[in-house]
Amino acid sequence: MDLKQLWRNRRGGSLVENTIMLYILQFSNMFLGIISRGIQTRVLDDKSVYGTLVVAQSVMTYFQLFLDFGFILSATAKISKHRNDQDYLNRILTCVVSIKLCFTVISVLVLALCFSADSGEFLIYLIFLASTVFNALLPDYMYRGLERMSAITVRTVSVKLFATLMIAVFMRGNEDAYMVPLFTAIGNFGALVCVYLHLFKKVGVRFTRVSRRDIFTELKESAAFFVSRIASTVYGAANTQVLALVDPTKTLSSIYSSAETISSTAKSAMSPISDSLYPHMMRSRNFKLIKKTLLIFMPLILLCSAILFIFAEPICVLVFGSGYTESALALRALLPSIIFTFPNYILGFPTLGAIGLAKYVNLTTILGTVFHVLGLALLFATQSLTMVTLCLLTGCTELLVLACRVTIIWKNRRLLRQEEESQ
Image (cartoon, rainbow, N blue to C red; front, side):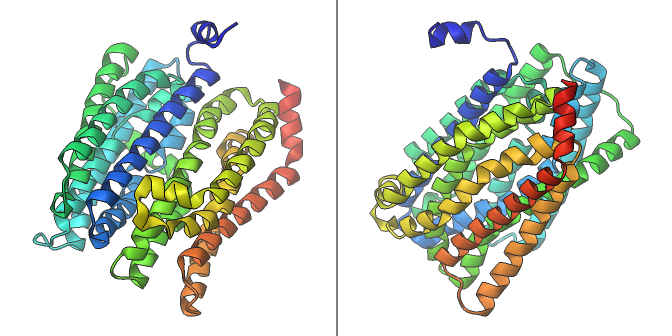
């Protein structure tokens, strides 16, 4: 049977379909992101201007995490378990959106307190925040839980492609830097409108009346996931900001961020597998699938990492231009973190969450964050803070988290056997 026939005969909402759709969504976001970064590094010949955009985007990571508040994990799991209860789905949607709108108000106030209204950077940060809010309001948790990613993928990719094209067409110099967040915001708003129209008309999920108690319950139950998500992102986003403190010109931040963009793209190739496994494992608890996944993909990851190590410099020059050859060294130093990321993903919520040990996913992530922050402090105190040491510290952090999760799974291996025997 050829691939086309296999796709036609697929079961709607299957693990394979949702994994493929998540791949398309993730890869298109990262691919378009790399193209956009490549355009920016070539058009914005002043690295301090590009560095300002880079630092602003890293700061928005915290706002994104705050606005999401872990619902991408907590709400996804609930929706997967109650997918046939329409009233329940309506309540989840209403509660999550209500919370995110309240958090939007808080985010705007925080941003206003951090910047003077007449600051030259305030407008860029404000537009970035608007883009972040539109992205956070996307009900992707609903589609992930229902395992119907096809619908959201096509619409989201289309409007984000529009944003990238607009940046390529209209951005001509350093004075046009604001167009990056502006067109991104327009694209995210377009995706938001399209997805909600589909959710209301095709899926049949709508807003409904909820009580304060319902909202606070959702908030409370998602708090643990929020702690895990923000802890796992602290040491990624903090790297760019720490380099900005060391080098106020933001040149180091721009060079490091270019390498980190490629690293993030490599990691994005791994997350769709984990993201699609999570709701599937919550229902099936087929742990043999976890083993097969690791055995199949780890050799491929090692091979791709070797290729990245060998061709790091030409890849950086190809993507970002001749002024970013220094990014190759940082990219090579980031490879250990890339290698350890995939097993961390798979052994996290898809494995520990499925056997009722989700709290250890959060605890190991927090432990990794504490280790990373202490490592940053040590490097700073000993004047050893460079791009390379920062990248190597990131790899050590991922290794520590992986070692902890493997240890916890080994100590609780009887739970895996019990779940497999009950299938």
